[in-house]
Length: 355
Image (tube, rainbow, N blue to C red; front, side):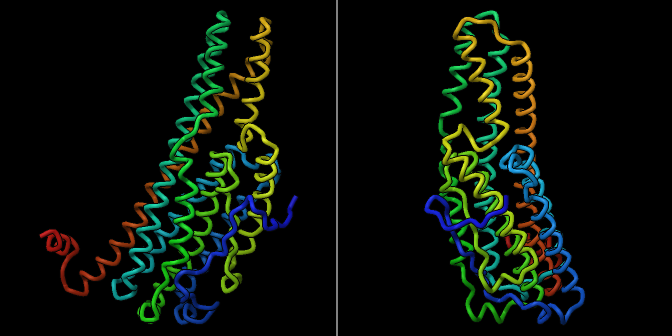
């Protein structure tokens, strides 16, 4: 199924620059410290494995709710790894340039905004499942059943303003990655520790941005939200770059073809439910008695779909908490080291800042 994703006006193409322009090559700077090299190698190896695990083995997995759960779980683990890396690096204020803190905070806020949009859409979809459950309970009253099915149809075609805004947020996220260039002075100020963090952050942001674009495209039904991210040439030697390209080449064409076919949704599980609802609605409108096997299968599908949407929502909520804790871990690490350099405790410094 693998195929190269050619440039297409219905897809958003971005060549992601490294906004920091200070990444060391292979064994240069990091090689001067076996510990730092080990931390970086372990991080990038795990990142490569996590990306490869997201490459669907079958086109029917694109985009299934199971894949969405796996993708969010994978992002949670990756962001946990960044949080751990920050602590292991023991960065101090003198290691980094002030702009790095601003960039990291800005990107974190945008990720949280997207997480909130996704959870709101999952809640909306589960409200639709609730309408179907009501329809199942009113089999003895044709009018009520038709009414609930009609309500479900209207609800499913309605728009979620937060999802409609995802494309703009994603674009700003790309811009924040590309345009926050560090000055020559900043490049000199960054220590080897900071360079390790920046290189790791680049991989995390690329993976997160792409998966979020898949979610946004799936929820909105628009290929405008689906990104094809080209890793910059200077970064092609990164161990995870090839796996990332393969992931996009597998997932993007399938999503694009589904959207072009004018099907109900990209999400396979939801499409299966919609197909069954159509059959049930036709039977009810004809005044016939619904096939109990069809009805039981539909009930089971709706219950399972609700449970799986809940899992995606739970993992998305977990990711929000991890993004916040990773950001806080960076700030705490920087200020803790700074406090030690001044010979004061962190609580004392916090009190002095407040006063």
